[in-house]
Image (cartoon, rainbow, N blue to C red; front, side):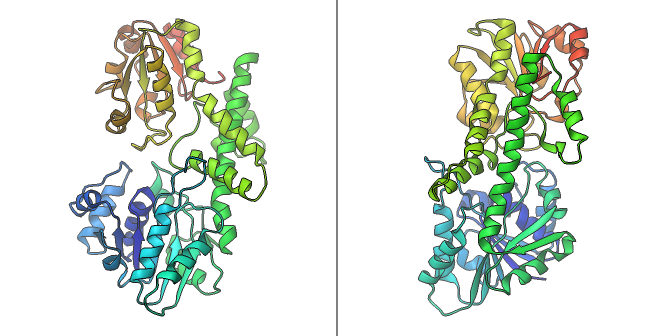
Length: 430
């Protein structure tokens, strides 16, 4: 088993660290946020992620998982160090590498033995060379180290499962030895392991997210056309998905994509292309479509209610997807903000994300249940497809709403069933 360090204890770092420990490795998780590290040492998980708390607590008890704010302490016995810090969007859309650069400098200053540094953060092509240079410039002792790329493909809400049962592991290595050492760490997962050069590995991550984002925007455009011509997008997706050349997994129309990856990475790959004098026209359109798609549900509810001033609209779902409390680039934020600007009274419920949304949108009535949020509402908009929203007593819902108007932003309901119950209903493309 290996001694491992993870620098950055967000979704990627914490899940990776906990899962590596669960595979029998000794893992030190490092973060500058003292409050977060203190909570983790007490067994408190700062994020909502299924199965994560149990894995963290179990491996802490078994003496395999540790937390610290000190890079010096965390890497002193490590053979492999993962960089898993955030790379948020800069104002121009590029990835902000400030955190990565600071970590590289600190690794250099504290590195006193041979080591492999694996970049797990989503970074622009060429960042491996930057990290190598910064470590070299700050070394105080002559040691052998290698910087490799090891992008993550974890989905929030199923991150533990995705780590333990990955489609593939991608490793970028230019040294000829470090990639195979890192690959051994992943062998217990019994998945496909691709070892390529660093630049290609960095590009694989952005290309994967860009392609998936493109699929979402594509099917949203198809859904909007279906609305206009009277077709049913669900039937369209079924017919498309039976073509072996088409993977229907991401052909789910809705209010658009959000979260910490797709919006940020879509903007970043456009900027990467621009840096090399290439215009990535498809991705620019994907971003434009996604930004517009969030407001489709507002147009739909106006169709039934007219002017929304002083109307009460219930919002079910605030997180950008189910099974997470993450509201980064969540469509709900843009939708609610627009409703508030139009003088709407917004009543909202989410099983996990309300505390986070309260920090950025305090002028919302946050309720303890979905039914409470819908009481005396003039309309209801489904924004996030949490399972508890999929099984609703429609007769009860209709009896407590002021007006029986439902805009299904995730197509989780049967239009015929709601219309038969007396609702005015509209989905996305159906």
